[in-house]
Length: 210
Image (cartoon, rainbow, N blue to C red; front, side):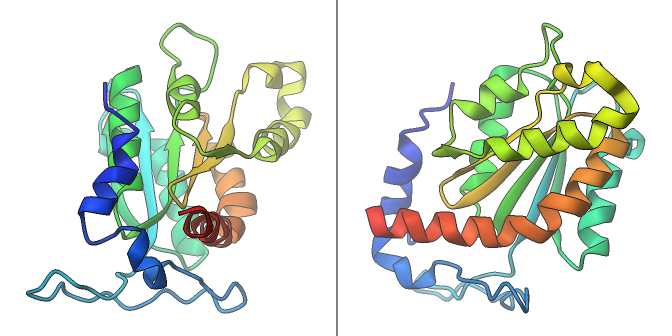
């Protein structure tokens, strides 16, 4: 299992430590324009790269070419004018989810991670447990909104949808079910309009506490 306490100390050893707080993203919510990408210079300094969303589909019994939920997340980010910086499909394992999400949070070009799958009540649905242990702060309103959006269609079955969100290391993380329609609504209505600003607020909080 990854030593998640090492994330902050690793950043202190790298060029992205707290002393580089001036590099923390503070996007203008009204404009939503990402900073241009720049190559790293010889001394290791770099301008902020163009940042975007990482999409992770959980459940390795399919491929990226057969991943409707991941397709829905990517399409809605694109439609909103955002940028998907990476897309992955991993097995539904506790350690695998933690390692993948932790690595994505450490990337300087990621302000949000969206996972799909593994939020139900079956034994191998471990996404929520894996990600929750890593969060700095949870955002309970996200799960409430997802369940409310599903109620007219699913009725009381929404109690089995354990969608959740939170922030860690200045990155917004959203754990969604594997249903493409739920992913589409949630990314369009909540993730796309709120993720970047939420991450900027969380990054400011991290800087003030360092």
